[in-house]
Image 1 (cartoon, helix red, strand yellow):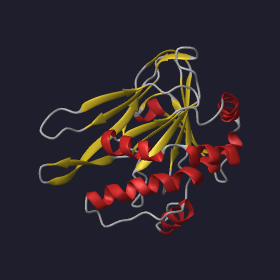
Image 2: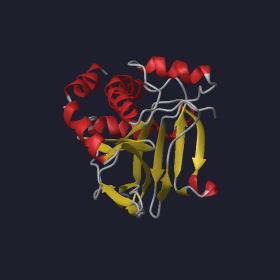
Image 3: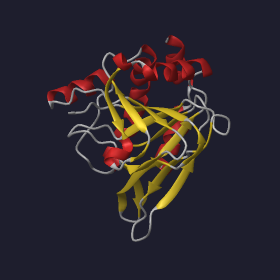
Length: 237
């Protein structure tokens, strides 16, 4: 897994930060290999890895299914989560300073998890999602308790246009005194999309203000779509 950590270290984090500050999202192309994507998908049926399965239509979340991992996480997921968090914490801390929010995130992920556990948030939030034809995910935000981290990532595990059609990642960005802007992202297999969990700062004439954002998945027209979602804070349940 040192290869993954090395790839993360070599990413141009200045460009990623600029994209996050400007747009609320950024893309790292090809962070994991095709083989690693296939291994993550192959484990979908191994019930020992997961603590909970959610059938989305049951809760009117959309149409599809996702599973929350148990601790300990698979090695590749743990490596990505641990290595990428410090880079994102720098961005998150900049956001909170601009918005005058009295909170700064620790530089290491283990310290954030300790804060979660002190608040009773000790359930893993990493999840794998599976959509078939007609599947979709309604617009939402992933907040699981009082302690949260404002940035999360999604890894695409299938090849768009080959394994599935449709199923774009959709973000919406609130525009003051207007309708929300829709953003459509089409990551390739192995790509990582980094995006805000719930808001980003925007500079106005009177300083920075908070812009709320949500994310979802458009309808899958054909095939199957799998993604891995990495959320950095733990959940109460």
